[in-house]
Length: 112
Image (cartoon, rainbow, N blue to C red; front, side, top):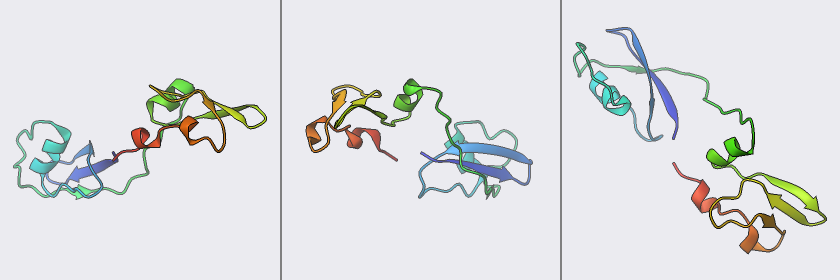
């Protein structure tokens, strides 16, 4: 799920929240509900502005980082044979081109 940055001009606070692409916080109260925090002294109907920010990216340091973020990494081991070094659950560690039963399960890896 994407992370968005919002600014409340009345209290000059910036909050980073995670929500779906089709959602948007219009007020301080909505923003605090997304962030699961207390609105404090700021009225909940105070308007907020979404900031333009660079996308948050990950820099994996190893196969376990790739695996935990839902990526698959295939390493060529032999002519036409690959090893899925990030295999999870019931996925095959050996991947053969043309044999779909050995491919990574992309339906489990993708989500909003």
